[in-house]
Image (tube, rainbow, N blue to C red; front, side, top):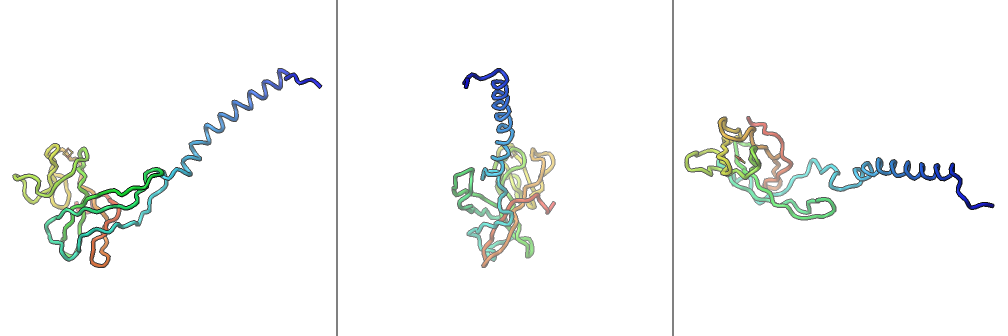
Length: 167
Ligand code: FES
């Protein structure tokens, strides 16, 4: 029996190799998408406890810092610090994201002497009304996002951010 590879066999082995490579190159992104933790949907209904007591809130926004424990980033888990501006409007608790809608700097309540009763972004003098509405003529192009809010055992818990519903 001859161990020589015929031209026909060589061509079919080569085609099978190239075909197999092309199929795996097509399937790999799909497999990665199915198993990569960073691409998995996050828990929609997750609320994070904050140190802010609900009955201590007034109509003046206060800065509330909170920590998201064990946030997954690919295969790594770490604690992530976050901040909200929280106040009361009647019986409703409002929590606004401090992330400026211009280029993402952090806004501060009454952060500018000349503009009281407003949020102010120091990066490019962005201004927002108390409900998060961006003030026309200043750089931000949209209102501040809102956090979902829940009160659990008297403490404010914050969920995901959603587009502002107040303006
Ligand atoms: S980043 Fe806030 S005004 Fe530009």
